Length: 171
Image 1: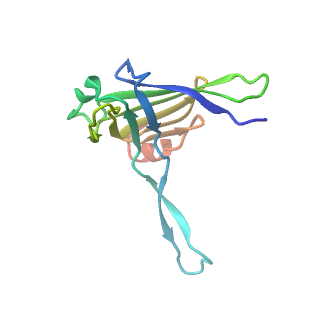
Image 2 (image 1 turned 90 degrees about the horizontal axis):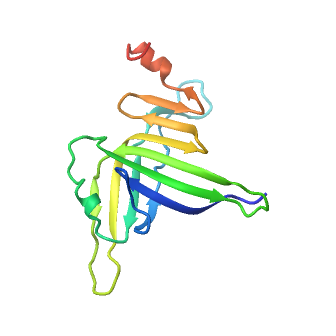
């Protein structure tokens, strides 16, 4: 069996597709915040789970895009909806295409407009801290994280439900 390779992708910001100008996208790293802990009687430290590190999406466009620039400075931390749509397929003879969709909400933290040079393509890089993240594969939600409400669902299991219930934030 051969690995599935991303064959093509699109980035959609507030319903506006950036096909043809989105050059690269860095999906958020999923990383736990941990602290090593070792107490009396323990043979070695264990990493205690203290939640998650900040989620961040980054993408590069090959133009100074006016639709993206108009979204600069929004007050709402989750005010910009952005989606990554990808199509992955292996080179096996009967390999189907996997539809990957990553939906996020956040706002622009940084727009790097780089250098302008005659006859060179303009590059605009955007950095977006996230308050919401959802990863779908072929229509199935594998991971959904809502930072503000504390929701963390992985593989259909709500990993934060007991904590939120204990805090009186869920029933």
